[in-house]
Length: 320
Ligand SMILES: NC(=O)C1=CN([C@@H]2O[C@H](COP(=O)(O)OP(=O)(O)OC[C@H]3O[C@@H](n4cnc5c(N)ncnc54)[C@H](O)[C@@H]3O)[C@@H](O)[C@H]2O)C=CC1
Ligand SMILES: O=C(CO)COP(=O)(O)O
Image 1 (cartoon, rainbow, N blue to C red):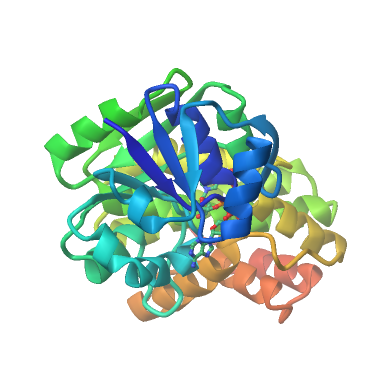
Image 2: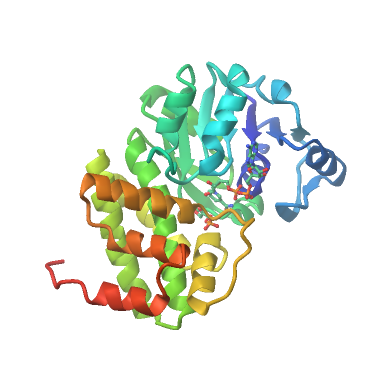
């Protein structure tokens, strides 16, 4: 069965490239000039340079054409998800919509599945998440991801449909765990980048990853997640990747904060808005999330890295 990928950023393009090994794939962009450029270059020079688009991948700027397929992967930034759904609701109604974004919506505190349910109640929602860099996927390197869907039979179908020669999908019905893990690991990646950027060392990073994971679990479990999900690809797996690789944009934002450098504001960094959303939610739910709160203050420049470290180290001693 053919699929369409809506959103021609790095991740959408990489998924479309990998999926085209299974059959025809349509990649949709909202930008007609970008569509023309990709059609003539057979490459997404803007977001994923250096990887050719396979023959089975067609590019369009027509949402009508892209929405002909029943399964639609939506690869846009989290804070844009609702507006994309609202703008194209007549074409997306009744479809299987697989959100491929990681984050928590700022104004509502909701994750991708909940936003899909609110904005497009007639759709069948699912989530594709887990440790994977677009470049790795596009280059055919082996990757394992989580396909989360509350509807178990549909999740099984999607797992079959979206597994490719280099993308191995595991499935879960715990959509809350999968979306919380994917969202919160980006916040921890900013924190880890900041300590490395500031020269505070690998031991400090290990401490942050571990205590960050404890925060992720506290929030996710309070929202209804199963603890095992957090220990899987979408939680621990993605935390490990994103907190330790220069390929991560979240980690690189952290590095620049730690080094006192500026960072290009046009780059998609999901953890910045998600930190704010998660910190506000943690306040409301009375959940202790000091690292998330610190990242919020670092990103908004209300705190220096030196003060951040001093504050975290001065917290009352407690049991692990
Ligand atoms: N790049 C990566 O390695 C990975 C990214 N992701 C997730 O995928 C999501 C998207 O990230 P990237 O593709 O990397 O970002 P990107 O910055 O490369 O691309 C974002 C794309 O969304 C499009 N877009 C933004 N607003 C839109 C709108 N209103 N209507 C239509 N299209 C719109 C942009 O034109 C752009 O093509 C994020 O949530 C990210 O966390 C997940 C795993 C890996
Ligand atoms: O989600 C990702 C890896 O799993 C990509 O990370 P960045 O968005 O930080 O680049």
